[in-house]
Amino acid sequence: MRKKPELLVPASSLEVLKVAVIYGADAVYIGGEAYGLRAKAKNFSEEEMREGILFAHKYGKKVYVTANIFAHNSDLQGVKEYFLRLKEIGPDALIIADPGIFTIAREILPDMEIHISTQANNTNYLTYRFWWQMGAKRVVAARELSMEEIRQIRENIPEEMEIEAFVHGAMCISYSGRCLLSNYFTGRDANQGACTHPCRWKYAVVEETRPGEYLPVYENERGTYIFNSKDLNMICHIKDLIEAGIDSFKIEGRMKTALYVACVARTYRKAIDDYLEDPRKYADNMDWYMEEISKCTYRQFTTGFFYGKPSEETQIYNSGTYEKEYTYLGIVEDVTKEGLAVLTQRNKFSVGDTLEIMKPEGANVKAVVRGILDGDGHSVESAPHPKQRLYVELDREVSPFDCLRQPVFAMD
Image 1: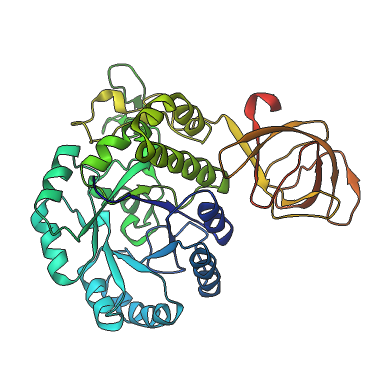
Image 2: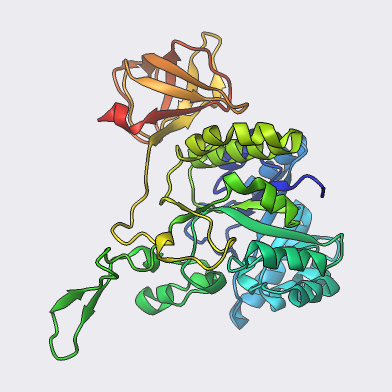
């Protein structure tokens, strides 16, 4: 059996990075304020990068920084200056797609580990060998690859070279994420980090001589969201992923909430550990993994390209929205000497509500809200304002980094 695979989790902010580390990630990937493919994510200032890297290293975890845009001439000087600053900040690796940016990284950061982004269309073992010879440590598999193709790549590249693959999260309609729809419709370039996600929109057809007559686009009368894929979910296929030779299991979602990251990281952490401890234990816990992973927001599930070309069953034609079973209320930032949970509230809840405390080690504990104090110490009946700092009395003990969530049906 190959070495234990890395669990690589996204983070949109310093808070989410800390949650990812505490809930089981081996490594976290983040974006700086420039040159990453998630321009709408909050992203990290350089000071936040420093703090996040120190936090991760304290727990023996790694931090990778994305610089995976496809650069235009006007970007190159800025990339050089940015990499000089990253040299001093000291992430564990850079994730890069563009050969020009790769060249700059090798020049300015010769000792930095470089990972080649999925955006680079890495679909065969010769491409992997090419990047290895250029000095890359790891290549992220194109999402179009099957399990068998990844296994063949593993057999034809150096043993020390690492394969990273997405195992969970949103699927892009475009080839390796190289999308032009966003640029065409809105002028915002997906390959420069500004995707507007037009694949989630509802489409119609207009006949040239009948302007204003919108004919809905149907596919077998299912609906009009013809580009909208289900989300990838490989939690039930850990054995196959390991045996294919994948070194890093990557979770998609650099714009997701702390609740999403905590839920996915904790579930995959347990699944990986259970399988490596005893495959029978992993098989016995399969229902728990699926139950927990379904508590995240998601667009139904698919195994993507891993087991062959996706069929019409991998699309969602009648809706562009997420399934949502739980609402994120906040992460416990501290606990006062009186036992009150200190948190920055993310969604409304009230005194008397029943919540669920999600523990990093795997437990889910039901708790009733006994009281809420606002930032000035005044008692309030509910917390309707997002980002409000609160002191919450629960009928159960809490610890820092516990995640508070509430079943959606409890709010109806």
